[in-house]
Length: 397
Ligand SMILES: Cc1ncc(COP(=O)(O)O)c(C=O)c1O
Image 1 (cartoon, protein in one colour):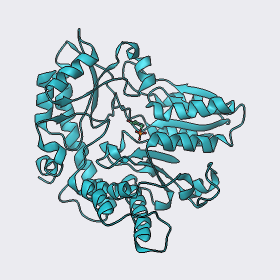
Image 2 (cartoon, protein in one colour; image 1 turned 120 degrees about the vertical axis):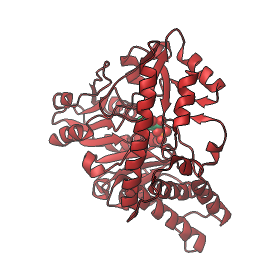
Image 3 (cartoon, helix red, strand yellow; image 1 turned 180 degrees about the vertical axis):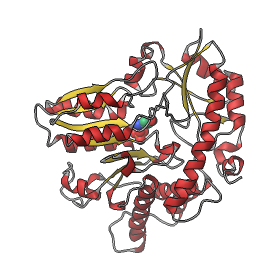
Image 4 (cartoon, helix red, strand yellow; image 1 turned 90 degrees about the vertical axis):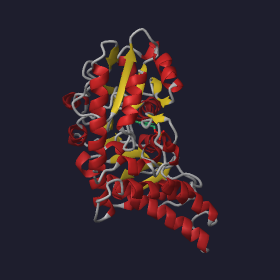
């Protein structure tokens, strides 16, 4: 068996106890290779990049390696289009700020109810600050889908940005991103795709998605807390961010503020290398190995998801939110007669990690009518989850 989940689990120190980790959508665990890559950077001596001496050149090499790794992960051809930063939220606020410098009164931006607030509020707040209209793509609350056909009515020649998620971090819904980016491009708008939840759950190809900008966060795919923004460097050359006068004006460096976490960048590369080796027979270039491994991981997660949905769906006391056609292995539910916080506490008492509340899916929980009453419980499977995790969870619910 080339996808051997028990072989994979053995690589993670945090998975060696009795705990069931169903909180991957909030943050995944790291294998020893990632932990060691970070520790090794400190052990061997760290310096800031840009200098003539060896440890400074090493910092520049670590940064370049992380950019290449992230480019491979998302199928981008240009490592110089990879901006690294503290997290997706910070990168998105900065990017919105930079784009807003060119927005004019009467322009508009399109956001969606399905998105995590980090791909909503930066656009809404910079739109408000710039006198720009905000248009909302609505969720079908029954199915949890984000119908793509509404976008042709939402965009026009004054649309500057269409921001949409690659997958919902609570319902798991994978919208038809390509149809939405096509609608954005038909009017000359920039398509900004939040891949923070989707990246861990399958193969990403930014060309297939049609994203002008794709954002992801390494701590959702076994890495450290580093945000990644991926775009064509030609596009980045056209965008002028606020920055220090003294810092580099080169792309992508000019989008990166202050001194970065070089040690964490080493962890990003190790995480991508780890993902590329999930399937033990994966061969070829790192990109090819990533594709093989992530296809296998997706199949593995889908089997577990189907088991989980079948068990929960068979119990009339459980309400499942959303049943999208294409989804990640993430489930949002409530137990009859029990608050989501109470359910999460019962699970915690059984050593099962599960999140409750809106999980920053702020608009979709409002649209579902559950935000003010505690929203729901979220469990999310990862490539290291196994059938025993699902069985323990189902039993405890
Ligand atoms: C779908 C989605 N988008 C954005 C974010 C924000 O990412 P970050 O924590 O890197 O700012 C999250 C975090 O949970 C997320 O799940």
